[in-house]
Length: 526
Image: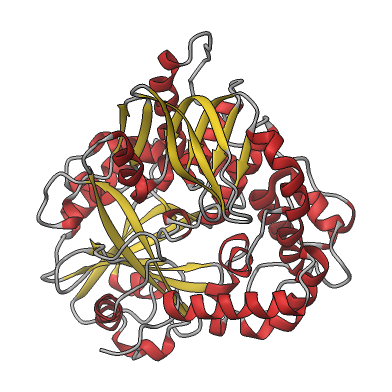
């Protein structure tokens, strides 16, 4: 809703009787809202910042089965993830896309061909299809140009998938709203409401005007990710999470040209590192370190993590002479991993968990890929707490099919139309119809249309410039300097669609560029 509609409609919305209040606007909360709404529950989701502001816009963007979890014996999680990957590829075409991976087989490096191919065989059995193959050195070098040739014996090829994680959250929320769910950003929980020991709702805090409305619900579900222990603390529970930071680099595709994703084990510690083509750039990740900083400000890559990833790149692609001057942008996210006391952060399990404590149902852990499984597990746990509600909790198609595009949209090629439908669903037609002259063309250097900026500003709950450039689109990660070159044209769009005058634009631009420099650029100093 836009700012005017929000101020007029929000008090009435919050005063309704709710079955479920979901706290947290990442992929877990969005998934629960969708699955609850399509099964008849009156569900409200609130997010203290922007939708997908936290981990769900800062993941590695991979929709994968977790090949490395096989090594840790987590077969159930891998099987579940592979199944959900296949479902997303089928139901979210244009948003979730296949991605080929290549892993070099080098003399003296681990894991060797036999061990790796055995893992891939299990992976394929779980997926119900054969995607693995081994190729000799010459063929592998053609598929993965610029890699280190010394000691190369060949390589293993396999399939996973990738997505735009923030757009996935927004698409899930869009589907949930179509089924009657309500989602509001910049509306956080100040405190939980309780009757005796039982949680019965929450007092909220509206970032727009400081209002503190109270909302009552039959059940409160915390899907706040790495922030879950803060809310659990209000019902007297000890912390259970270990926040782990994963940081990433984005480089121009011409500096790190990739025909396939290239996966490798880091030469220092043997952790998996990957580089793959994403949204017109090359994405490199990831680290896995304890996040010692607070959770109230955005996470950012450290100098040590930057150097760690650059070492891996130079080792795997020695002829490219890559350095920090090649980095377009960086981003870091904090994973909500359940603490089991492992010395090595990478050995912590990634399964999700549910805790019901004094009427507060907390959902923690898990992966982007398995958000539907997590949501359905949460509703199974919630069912006994919602007398009178009965529903079939077997998985439904993740998204309903959107009608084909027509009219002005036919100016786009088939790939562009599929991309729009994947990201915007049934809104894709209205997005194209709303485009001004020339706005159905891509922004130079990206696959994003100018029309997507206009639609995001008009219809997708944008309150700040970073909402538009870092989550509704990913232009702040794809274009130099956080997208400085398009600011004049973007200013005109924001003036029309958001009603921002010169003073508001100047304040938003300064706020965004300061944020980008602190949290999305190359870290300064040693």
